[in-house]
Image: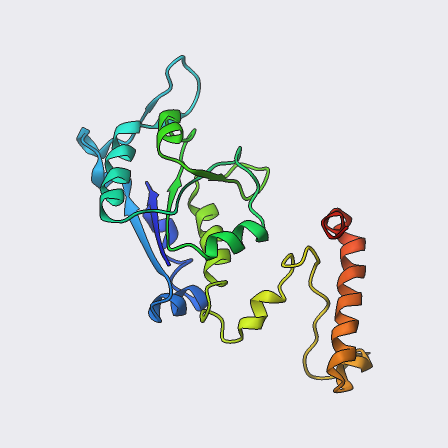
Amino acid sequence: MRVDIITVVPGLLDSPFSHSIMKRAQANGLLDVQVHNLRDHTPYKQAQVDDYQFGGGAGMVLMPEPLAILIEKLQEERKYDEVIYMTPDGPTFNQKTANRLSLLGNLMIICGHYKGIDDRIRQHFVTMEISIGDYVLSGGELAAAVVVDAIGRLIPGVLNDETSALSDSFQDNLLAPPVYTRPADFRGWKVPEILLSGDHRKVEEWRHEESMKRTAERRPDLLEGNN
């Protein structure tokens, strides 16, 4: 999978893709993340990419021309399955969306900044909008990193144990069950005996029951999707 990210602050994306699972995914050729500095593609002096809003109001808006130039340049090089705009007024990102996007080949992600981007770019180029929650960040970079991480770990071969991603929270509209590791007895706090039994069928039954219980307690809204 290739992901092209458009941003005015590329430095914010250095760390998220330079460590751990995302770093290994790229080193193994399973994921290719390319970050593009919008300021390198503007026709305006002093690398200007933003301007005041028509009609007045606080906050600057990313101009349409630099975005259109870069988007079209990238589209000349490859066909994109989705052109995504990170915005707080988009549909909320979830595991179902991550699963779908992980099956695609080429994604472009546009990171807003200041008060966002000129709406004509949304109307004529963007095919999908995503929010990671009902709050506002300084820009779309951190949100884009969240989305790429969630998608990237689902690509076959990225995780050492491919079943790990399938058992994550939200994959089946259930929260993950509690997990334990050694020692089996820590300060008198003991691991449930069933996990030490070696009976895989009973362990899976226990995990499912615990997932149901935890979901009912913490996110009962998710159970509606199982009905």
